[in-house]
Length: 67
Length: 558
Image (cartoon, rainbow over all chains, first blue to last red; front, side):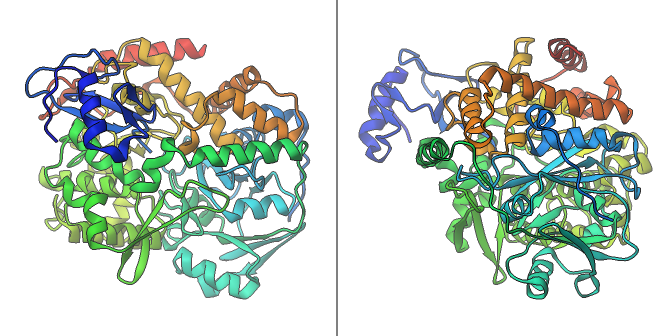
């Protein structure tokens, strides 16, 4: 999914609109502890103020990563 | 000869059950210094105080021994009714010592124990064995059995019950060495709880929370959901850990599988999560986990999902650990690639080769006789430096987590009592979080690795499924509450934390007596000498790992 967003908060806001089925997990205020967000395979992000650059890739995954 | 052995309340409170009690019993029975496949070697089936309670996921048992694959401590866990039957037969544990004169079935009927002939189930798969024995003995018996691989002493043979396996480390090999094909248990005793009303309330609350978002992944796709995630992170072991990404991974994904194969979900007895995803293969069902898809798929370079499903099914039929099978086969494939083994059919990417290799391993025929002993022994026989890329720690093949890209997990693998293990160390949880930089482990990573190891040890002793770990908001506090309600002990969170550490130490004690040295707490050379081609930043030096291991031992107080 491609999005135009400068911050993590804006991404969540966009997702909460585009994916209403995820409303239990993702809101414009944040996300449920059972999921995590990773930027470019490097760092895991939580702060809504995290800024993104062009072509950044955000992976949203289960926080329960293994098993 | 069967005899009952009372266990003091002190021992039960200090080691609880499952892996903890099993470790204590293994030490008490002298199992740490006995050859794993000798008649004198003890094999322990340990239940726990929570088994038989209404607490979700509590129907589990641990099988504990010294491993014939590693020579070190081994605890493998399986689920479902066998655990409950054991408790109802009045047992906290069943300890087997000795060897039957011929292949037999051990029957435990409440307090009565006898051996029966196993001629009619010799060579049978575990499902067929269970079916036949329940027809012979009665449907209220619960059966734990070995497949043909256990009868032929494949060193990573499993013990299976109700389609689930006590899979790693060769528990099935030990049972087979005692000429025991199966254990059949029936019990009629009622298990009493100290605080039944509190227990019922705790159980209702835990069950309700187990349906929430923290376990959604297991219901939706199961552990197989890891496959594409790990591939995106570059941590999907591919071609014997030569790479961390597999271009054909989507072909093995559960998202793909469920478009082509019918699928049902199932759960263990007394479980509300329902993590099992069963795909229909050739008219029969096969449970698929992430580890099957990795070990028999990407690790061998195989993208043919039909072959991977069939290979998983074949491992189940023979009673073989899929991780060790896949790791050993992948190792052999690389040996062929390097000209160290003359088996030109055994090439990366060939699903037919994986299937043929599994069958040869199960029969101990041809190259299977070598591979049936695991990748470390195979490397020792092949020589020519092949030990450098045998994917094992302490002889136990590495599960589907690329250590160079998940360095807290790398530490967990290196120091694990039973070898490379993602169930006894949950350090990957830390790597997939904002607590550490997964590619650059620091000494701060160590305390996180210890924390996950302690929690795993406690869960394996209570016994509760680790898929509950994110459901428990106060891990030690809630665990203490459950144990109090079951036993009436005034146990606290702090006490349980100490108990967890005691259990980890007991496992280490077994290993010390069995000849462990610090040199074993490491990874194969490949992980130090070959960076990942797709992720040059994911680089781990031997010196760095040694620093982490030293810090681990220091923080453990060893």
